[in-house]
Length: 199
Image 1 (cartoon, rainbow, N blue to C red):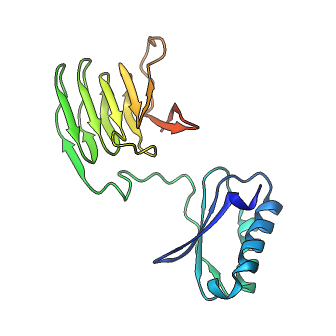
Image 2 (spheres, rainbow, N blue to C red):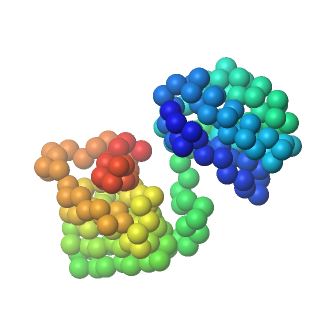
């Protein structure tokens, strides 16, 4: 783990430390300590929250980090679950809610997040600047993050699109499955490739 894998940001609520990937807790501890040491007076008195992109910290490891922050006059806020998923994301405060099925030939475009309480049939097209959430079966074309947002997601109770797009990355569906999955799925970008996972 390099120092670049630890990012320290000042926010209105205090200080946020973002850990890109946890390969070794000792490396994490060392990188955080070195960054705080270089800016000792700047962070004094601040409240710290930790966000983890990949991996997790045990309670014992949080306690060890708390000791470091105490040495620098800082306090560690209670950690929230690293797997918490928020819909819609806070930066997408515009939401279009459709309580209907989107039929073949229909195109829905919106400069925000689109939530559909129904299905999106084959031949339909959904284009959103933010996320696309379908509370049913998605069988049409879906393009999330249409204005270049690579953090956008597509989620559905049954994800079977004819074409899936996030930002500028396009994915075609795998071979037709005989049965629909029994759990909701989410599509997102990882390393510039669209991956589909259980939600």
